[in-house]
Image: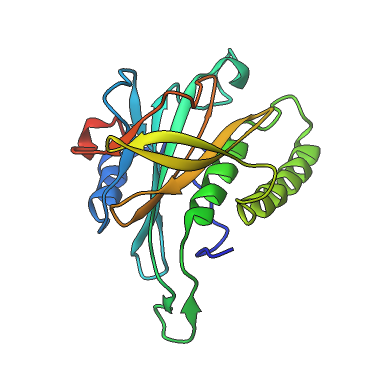
Amino acid sequence: METTGRVGPQEAPASGADRVVDGYLMAGFPWYGLDEAFTGPRWLMRVGAAADGTVEHGSTGHGDEPSFRAESGPDTLRFTVVVTVAARPVRSSPDGTGVLEATSVSSAAWLAGSGLLSCTWPARMERGLRQQWLDQQTAIAWELADDLDGPDWSTLSLPVDGVPTDFRYRESEYGWVLAGPTTEGVHIGAYGRGMSAYGLGFSVIKDISSYRH
């Protein structure tokens, strides 16, 4: 699979308002979120950057913020997280000693899949077993993202900036994941739990500071 590496989104929204939003403002590409039909809370997670500081991807949250400190537990949370990944060609590494692989829709699918796992692991599982479970499920998510044309994925058409777009989509007991292209030089992925993916729409975020951070 073409990707810049197995670096998933952060497990929870980051603290430090200025630092968080600054990361988004430094990106050389547009960010995506749910469109205006969604009227609930919106919040930011941290961006992912290359070794030279170039912003490569980030996630915007909608609905409840995933947290295992919540007394109600993860099963009652309703959220959708949208992952934006810069479309990059194969390019030289910052130190000039090698090359970085291109990003693709599979990259967005991987980041979305690993993001879903990071906030839906079994809270009652013993700590040592939990890490084994997470490692195993993460490897499966990687393999699934590398085979978007395989039988584990279906096609779901959703609007992106008002234009019907085909996404690769799959469901599991932990939630759902989807990924697809845009016309704005980025790939987008999404994952969620408690909120149906059917009927969602995505659009470019006009003012990233409108998201809580």
